[in-house]
Amino acid sequence: MTEWIETERTRLRPFELTDAEQAFTWFSDPEVMRFIPKGADATLEDTRRRIVGYVDHEMRHGFSKRLIIHRETGVAIGDCGLHHLPDGQRIELGFRLARPYWGQGYAVEVGRAWLDWFDTHLSGTPLFADVHADHLRSQGVLEKLGFERSHEEIVFGMPMLIYQRR
Image 1 (cartoon, rainbow, N blue to C red):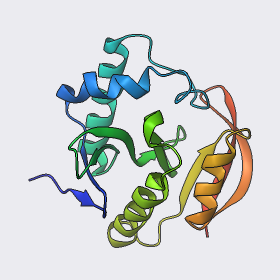
Image 2: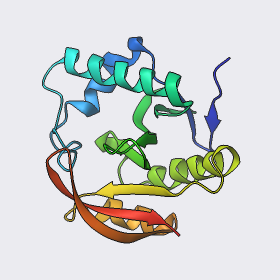
Image 3: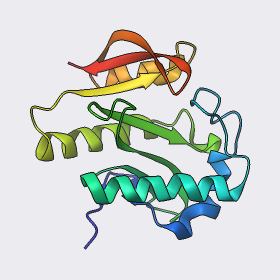
């Protein structure tokens, strides 16, 4: 049985391949994906491959990026969750929302839910996040969630700021 993560306004569940068309709306949006290494998905098949990676990560580790479903409407509004950084050792928290849902507190809300999940299942493990230096909104979200800037590194060819949870 799938473990759902719930917040006041959202439900988070593991991705399924049937989510590709909905997810393509934000994965293909150049503005949403502006600060994401590798950029926007050009095709629906790109989004399917991305989701296959998330499903595989979920099966191997018990966590991954998950679909954010708006509780009131049942509409998928973005994705968030935990994923290994490219080094395969560190775990990162990440979030991405379709543009109509920006600036409404969803990133902090789902981020807090993931921190609760993390503290229950992976207590004592360091937690990181990577963010582009120009992505000030995401930096603000991370600071509200108790992260602080640690260092800079290249992630999938893009210079990123690495934050660590205090």
